[in-house]
Image 1 (cartoon, helix red, strand yellow):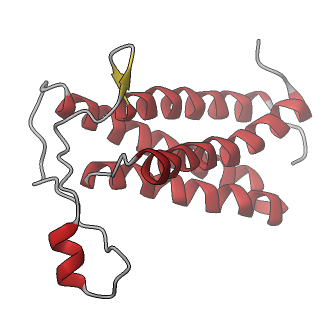
Image 2 (spheres, rainbow, N blue to C red):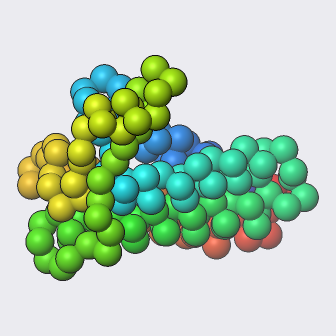
Length: 163
């Protein structure tokens, strides 16, 4: 059962910051620690999480606008989840992607041509890692969507309490 009042507000604000930060941390851990390089649609999923983290931090700083900032962070998390659903559909062949889906990160040598030529080509329509038949994009969809809906529910239940 969801909390009410001030407790619901505390959880909403915490989740609005912690969920996107944890998902971004997991994405970078996979990239750096396990060579799971992001494709173009993986990057699309990260951008709303960057926005949500910034909004979550601002919700702790700008207390007068905190409720709005948390709601906007939840909306950004939900957008990332929607992109994750689309990406998972492309990975599983349910529909076609809308990009060429290749990645070309710089390798740090200072030579962009060498970086592009040596970069791994990561296709959006191939699952790099999965558990129980769910890809990383699928997990982003599930976690982001559930978290955003939970934050919205907590915000609703915290109305009347002061942020």
